[in-house]
Image (cartoon, rainbow, N blue to C red; front, side, top):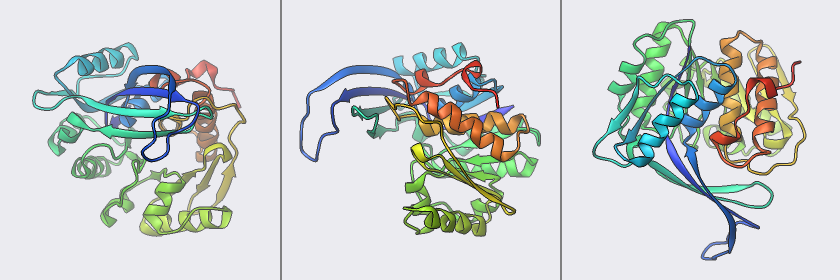
Length: 299
């Protein structure tokens, strides 16, 4: 089982020729309203790629929350621990995407901020050493810490996607099996400006020194850098024409969780995840862009 503890949002997306400068208004094109949130995106990605997924999140008692729950069920995600909050609205993300697929995002977390440590503990009661826990940082850090402690106690593998970027308590790192920052997140966590291969290597070494068992630093179209205690590798991403990169990282992490649940070697898992993410950026939307297992090339 793959347990995802994280956020659920409704994404409101405007596509424009370029992203506006500070204080500027630009005329956009297409408007999309789709389900999103890093946790939900990763749960959907994992489910579509063949994972058996339980999602632990909190939505508002509103239309967006009901639509999200319906979407999870359609994706064959276990929803026993999708909690409803009567005091806060469902989360919303405002996303602007340019003609090259680059984006900027502002999030109103709403009910995501009400996902409590007790909620996480309840949702993870059945977690075992054979399971995978996948986490991000769009929910309260205390809830993340509680989930990590519960999973570590039971011997489950923990994937930490430290996004959006924020500092983590030192005590978290030794419990993490795999941490997956992008360049910006790696820079914040390590103090190293990630700009070339040498700086990527240095940032990964620092994360290992903090206690993480394995490190993957995602590098966008350049691929991903994998660092373990024994080896390192730069794994290329398939070349594609990007349309919307909004959920590429979420797709990558959901795919990683599936690969680890199937006991793939880490290098194979990164190749699998990079292939899935490359497909996702050729499509508009977050969850709608996630590929199915039969779309992933067989190595």
